[in-house]
Image (tube, rainbow, N blue to C red; front, top):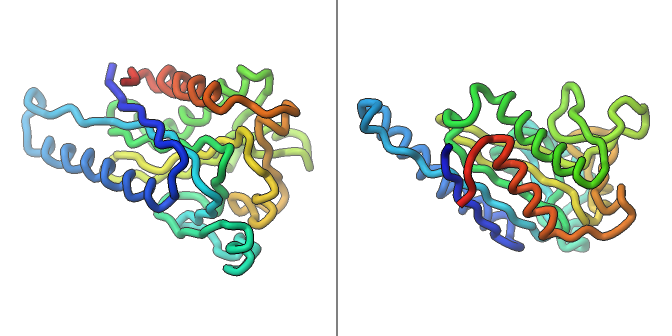
Length: 233
């Protein structure tokens, strides 16, 4: 069982968290490159990280996303105290803000999964199990990443967790955004993940009450460790 260093970064600006991710990501890649020149019995075990945080209001656009899915201009962003970043993750546009748990696993994926789809599915599974602990049934949606509710009910399908990742040298970064007590009005300024016919939701909205963020963080952290089969340190 591999050890994973868990860090709660608290509320942190998106750019600062991205730069920190890149630093850790490059450290893991560098060790993997060194291992390419070493016999199996001399290879170094790479570090692995799980970062949790919340961001001030920010919209991020994936490398394959359409900027037209941001429905407001710079002045309107300023008025809502929000910023905008183009990123190097997959996926389209999404929103991050207070009351949302953002998770950035920086993992040597060769330790944990056989393919990219399996990695995404394990992230989804950890979220699905966390949501289930609150008595809510969630699921995957064919043709889309993330975790959704009522996927078989036309007009009622809504997303509770967005996922967008980047991998290089079979190391992961970026990750997921799980709506707990999120102000969902901010999603009205975008076509979330490029969809115009589906909405977003949160634990708070589904349950009709504010949820203890620390309780959810602890539960989700432990579910991720359980699903991937690693030990948090």
